[in-house]
Image (cartoon, rainbow, N blue to C red; front, side):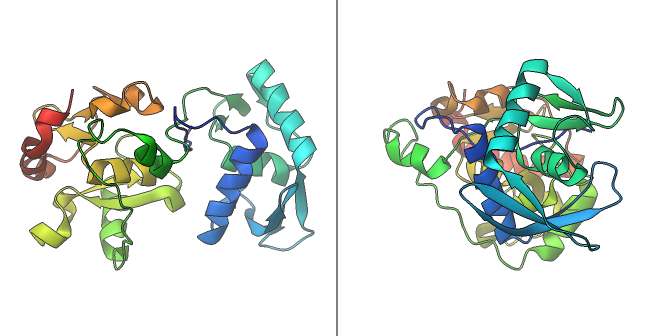
Length: 264
């Protein structure tokens, strides 16, 4: 099973590989993220990091593992050239290769072939707020994107994780730390907190969905994006047909018709 996440904007330069994984590590460390080895037998967590290294702790015990900037960059560069490498050959030690797979959006592990693979299809906006700040008002229809503090949603999210089998409904990502419970119609307005009014989404997709830059067409469950997102990596999701429970349709109808004039 292959899944990934990261951010990139056409208005911001693309990060190099080390900046990508270090930035991702910082975000996930804040949420106390844990992850399993590729074989699923060992669990890891972040111990610390600085500009040149990421230190990983084996939760079950053992020495700390250091992923250095130079070694990681060389391993990723080699994988990019070869496109796929047996899981034991990417970089020395299981914990290091597992961490690179966990952190880099273009590195995935194929459980069927036991190969670590390079993909080129996982770069949404690098900094969504910068994108909004730099865009013209008419491009975004004067929509101000504010990432709300989503509290008291643990039960709502747990229900949606069950409904959507732990996957983002649009991207298919399965890293729980990056998934959020999105209300189709805002809870503050509708008062409806049941799963029929919810979709499990990756955090950046949630932000776009809440701020009417991405919608799901009720009649066929096709994703539609705002015209300002064409030319960005989010364009890949335009006209993507997704699977949703039938009970979501009535809530999508209410939301979609409000802003359909902004969508392509």
